[in-house]
Each structure stands twice: as C-alpha cells, then as structure tokens.
Length: 604
Image: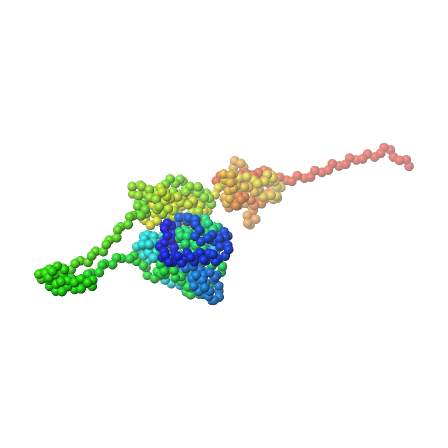
C-alpha cells in the first residue's frame, strides 16, 4: 500500500519468493489474452512497468496482503478445488455483499462523473482485497462502516515511510505519525483531499466502504487516465503503490474477479494471511496505536555487603567477602558501597532533516495572469517554488494545490486538489486549470505537504463565454406581407477568434433604426408563450456548434423596412434587414384586339 517514496517495502524473503513463483504460475495458467489491451491486462510477469505519475500518495509506505487468487475462477457453488492459496470455498471465492455493492456503486458513479476513465469495479475489488481483505472479510455494519478501525502500522520510518502526523489523530488515533486507515487504506493527508461521500450521508469517512471505494475510484481516475488502456491502468495502480509486485498482484486479482464472482453474507469472507512485510495480519483495533517508547534498562542486583560472601551473579563469578580484590567489600569491613545508578539507555542518533523539514516558505515561480473563458482551459499554469529561510530552493518536496471559492473550476482530470513534487530547481508546476461554467474569481492555495510552512495564494478569474463575430447562415432576403409571418427563421453562427463560440449568451431586439438601438414599437415581432407580441429576446444562447436560430417572426400592418439587431457577450453584433410590403398583384393580361370584320358582306 505505498506510493511515491521510491523504494520497495521490506519483505520476508520466503514470502517474496513464494509470491513471485505463484505469480508466474498464475500468469502462465490464465488465459491466452492475459495481455490484451482491451481490458488493460498485464503483459508478462516481471515486465517493466511505466513509471507512475507523482501527483499523489494513496497509502503511505504501508504493507499489503500478498495472497494470490486461486487458479480456478470464483464460483457460486461451495465446492472446493486446489490452488496456490489453498482450498477455494464459497467464502473465499465471493465478496461480502455490502462491500461488493460499494464497488459497483462507485463504478456507476464514476461512469457519470468521469465517463472517459472506464473504471471497472473489479479493479476496486482487487485493490480492496489486497489492501484489507475486503474490509476484513466484510466486517461492516448495514451502512458500510467497518465494525472496528482497520489501521496500518504507524509510518515512523522504521521499515516504512516517515510521515509525521497530519490530522491530529482524528482519523487514525495517532497524534505522532500517520497510519493508513480503512478498507482502502488511505493515509490521512491523502484522504483530506481525495475523500468522497459515497453513501450520501453528508460525511467523508475513510472507514466507510462506500466512501472509501468512491474515493479510490476518483483517485485512480485522475490525470485524465483511461483505464481501458493498459498503460493508463498500470500508471493508476502504480500510483497506489509503486511496486511491480503490487501491480502484478492487483492485475491477477482483477482478472480473477472479471471471470465471475458472487455475493456472500457480510462478515463471512475469508481474510488473507500473508503480508508484504511480515506474515502477520494488519493491526486492527478500535483503539489508536501509539509510537513505541524505549523501556529503561533493568536495575542490576544490589551488590553484596562487605565482609559477607558475594552473591552469585548467575555468570559463574563470585564475590570474596572482605578479603582480596574481587568482591564488593573493601577487605576492611569499611563503608557500604552505594547502589549504582541504572545505565542510561543509548540515545538514538537524530536523523538528518528531510527536504520537507528544510522548507520555510513558498514563492511564486513566475506565474502569469490566470484568466480563462467559461468552459476553456487556462493557458497559464501555476508554478510555485519551495525555499529555505535564506531563499535556497528545495527539491523533492510535495506541494499541494487546492482550489477554493465559489467555482466549478478544476484541474485537468476533474479534481480540485493536486499534489506535485518540486523539481531540481525547487519548482512544482500544477496541472492545467479547467474553467467551469461559473464566472467570477476563485483562489488556488499552495501548501507544503506535511509541514506548516508559509504558502502562497493565487487568484484566477473565469469570464463569460464570448463571441466576436456573427454571420447569417443564409443570404435569402427576409420579407413578409403586412399581417403575415416571415417564411424563414433567422439563423446566425457565432465565432470567437475564428473558432466556434458555443453556449454564448445573446440578445435579439427589433430596433428603431441603425442609430437608435431602442426597441421598436411597430413592425415585425416575435411571440411569447402566450402568443403576445414581443420585440426583445434576452435568454438566447448559441448551441454546441455556435448556431443560434431565432423563433418565427411576424408582421403587423405597418409596411416598411425594419432592423433586427443580434448581440452577444464579447461584443459581436449583427444587424439583419426585414422588409414588410404588400405582395405584388399579378399583372392583368392585355385584352385581345378586336378582330376586324371582313370588308363587305355576302350577298344574299
């Protein structure tokens, strides 16, 4: 359960060897197609994995369960078969009902929130099994909250990462160091920004499987990753724990669940037995765990009085009473030797300060003006630098960028929080900002993860969608007879800097003249919902293609030439000419000339 610390967890040699051999056997036994791109399956055991993105840290440097899935797919029948993890029973092959429901609900929520991610619930089930054995075999209440807290070991640097307390013990009960918490094993500092309310109770509880599963889904779907692509799937898993062994294990469990699974009653699931650091289970207690303390050395036995036989110290040596040199006596029956003080336990050497400890403050690193039109990406990216008290840059420090304020702006991938490590120059470049539909200002705060150093704030602005050009889509003249209706509807296309201007607000007004933009009181008009004449429309908006089609126009009895003016946010204006004139009557045919009668008449 670790991410982004650049080193492997300690593992028992025997456990690692068995796990590696079993992974290879399982990979060989499972399908042709275990390397298919379609489902993001692994290519081969031990293959080089792509480096994970370093914008977050799910679980600290905590251990995980290394038990492998059985060779046979899960089956609803209670029959057993042999596999690398032993007999397969109904409980081992199934997933506790509430836990399974949480995974499937998270998949459905992500299908709406981030459809491009293509998150499969089987991935959440695989991680949930590796992290906590499906919430310790489904030990949850009816609402999905674990009956007791599931805690990883304290991250005190003793074989794991060193993460000093970030939550005051609020989540893990430990005010000295952080511990991974809950069924998906988030550390508190990650839960602070990645936590989600998955069951709609208004709380974000890492001990609730619905909340934890949805948070894990969003975590895996950040950075615009598409988990139907193998490379992105691997990046996402490695961001949860940067270990090839972990990647192989999760992929095997995901493939196992993809072949079929079934629901079992809560609390009846099996719990894995092997962990990546030891063969013991994860610490699980309703009480917090505390940092270890150094016990004082035992007090030595009281020395013998002078002049009396010395006491056997259990090591073959004896005192010699008051005679000679070896005992505690001085040979003359003199003063009693006082009890020696117990030895002072050795003080462990103070570890050198980490890079994070060196940071005194953050500075802007040349960020330009942050402004974008609604719906657009910001062209400028926030850049901050970590510095010591004397202004020296500090590399390899994690900075957290948090969006606040009344806005729906996000970072790329839809998140409002991003964590980025500083480079060799001490600079961290935030992901690109994406403007939402809400206009106005919002704030981005940059802080140091794990240290209360002075941060830096940035103000960003979102302006309304705009157009700078309007043009009719047809050049057909718009004419109408008095009291009639215009045959065609007015349609225009809006653009901004030559590109489609979609969802731009517009107004259409029948004006008095080119010089007088006030509303006309005669001539053409639109109709409102009640059929009454209106000559101004204010709730118009271009569609996704930048097109705006106006309602039908009608004419009163006034003939003449009239003007329709359309304006948009951003200053685009178009004036359209409308003509109202009586229809021309068809010309009457000329009368035929009278045919002259023939001269004279026939004689009778």
